[in-house]
Amino acid sequence: MSYIGHTPEEGERMLAEVGAGGFAALAEQIPQRLRLGRPLELPQALGEEELRRLFQRLSAGNYAPADSPSFLGGGLYDHAVPALIDALVSRPEFMTAYTPYQPEVAQGTLAGIFEFQTMICELTGLDVANASMYEGASAAAEALLLAAAATGQRRVLVAESVGPRIREVVATTLDGTGIAVETLPAPLGRIDPQAVVRAAAAGPAPAALLVQQPNFFGLLEPLDRLGGLLPGQGTRRGHLVVSADPLSLGLLVPPGELGAETVVGDVQPLGIAPQGGGPTAGYFATRQAWVRRLPGRLAAEASDAAGRRGFTLTLQTREQHIRREKATSNICTNSALIALRATIYLSLVGPAGLRQAAEQCLARSHYALERLLALPGVGRAHEGPFFREFVLRLPRPAEEVVARVYAEERILAGIPLARYAAHRERTHELLVAVTERRSREEIDRLRDALARALA
Image (cartoon, rainbow, N blue to C red; front, side, top):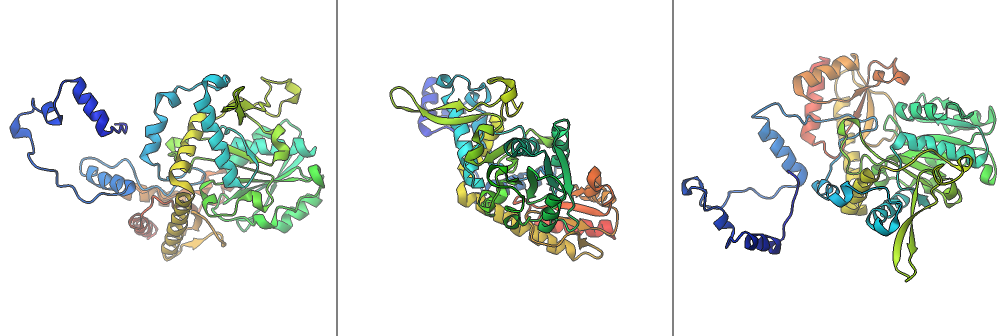
């Protein structure tokens, strides 16, 4: 059932409307023998996550629990979703809102977009953000198109440590544009700044370098050493494009402060459940110099003839509104309702709450790695600092291990890297993600289940 809250005054008005003198009068039709006749013996109040976990344990006595502990990652994560988000976004004025072409009747939608843009700018350390993208992968491809248009160069570099799905979308989107996409190897799990220098000098000047932070393997890339590596001067200098996890930015230095020209990503960690793979929403932030090349739409603050504050769509740089040859993108809209979820999440938790969620991910993932590395034959595939996610090297094929762990314990132990075409040969490596929702007990259960599967 959806969350519906009533104030005492609203309750009194409803009772008066039906002619009842109080709540007890509503229960007069219930036989006395069926009434409890005393206050409920309730335990001390629990937090939302603890209460959800309690109900899952109670329901397990009736049927197999549907919500298995998930250590899946690779771009979709099992983060906490406060109940208030569903309560707010399910309101009809949000659920049925249409594209805000008419600002005079869409001020609420435009205000929500404006707040989303503002929060993304604060997270990324950049000047301007659009109303959102379809998802993070297409946002990365659009950022490379922007870089190519801004610099006039037709070559982009993409780190091998960027997620395979993002790289596939980039390759598909840029195919046929005349922009060459080159992959930079990351044999140690992270990009080598010197490899960037060598690659940039080995051909035409690159328009952009795309990296992910944290990268697909959970490792932190050396952004502070990448910002000024691409050749060129002024507007012709290649862009550092960073696909950044927004929740990690509660802890990490904003990429915009480390030299990134454009920062993109997926807001799924911010109050959006994995939902079987989607929908999610992408974000796109860049510097003021490139605002007229920004894909999609932008909501801006304005004022009416009376000087009252309001909002409107502006700089709609797509082919529907301007001559096709001047359009920067064929992106036609934004994922408004999902972006609103992220906006509500950030409003609820605030800077301190976002940092706390990131710190919980950091602490619990490091605890999990320590526990799992104690298993015989288990090693770490990559060394270096990481956030929320890491790759284990197992003594047996990872597919066999995760299948047995799920069959015996109903635990989703992680993603075998060999499922991705780009990592097909890595049959014994397992990508494990640990969010703030994973308790110490669940991590210990994973450790014990893996021990039995590897025995």
